[in-house]
Image: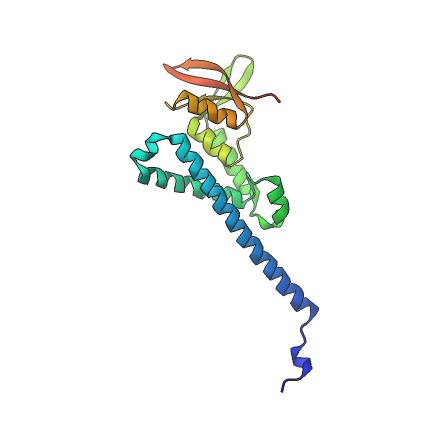
Length: 186
C-alpha cells in the first residue's frame, strides 16, 4: 500500500496544472471566436458579391479561404480584435504585432496616391483592398479615394456606410469613376 508521502502534490504542481488548464481553455475559446469571425466574414463576402457568387462558388470559396488565412494571422496577433476580447485573453496570448504592423505599413505604402484639392497625398484603394482591411479591423484612413472596381454603386456605398464612411464626391479619372470618401462625422 502506498504511503501518504507518495501521494502529496505540491502547491507548485497544482498551480502548474491550473495554468495549463487555463491556457487550454483559452485556446479553445479562441478557436470558437475565430470560427465565429470566419463564418461572419464569409457570410458578409457572399452578400457583398451577390449573384456573382452563385455563378462560381468554388472560385469564390477558394478566394475567401485565401483571404481568411491572412485575416486569421492578423487576428492571432491581436490586430482587428475587439478591446474586450483583447482584455479577456490578455496581451501575452497574442503573437507579436510588430512584424504584422510593419507588413501592413509596407502594403499601404505601396498603394497609389495623389494630391487632391486641399488634402495632400490621398491614398487610392480598390474596393477589395478597402473591404479586406476593414474586415480585419486595420483600415485607418479617414479620407481616401476608392476605386469601386465596377461593383454596384449601391453595394459600395452601403458597405462604406457600414464602416462609418460616406462618399463626398464622385471623381472621373481616366474614364473611370472613383469616389472621394471621408469618415462620417459623429
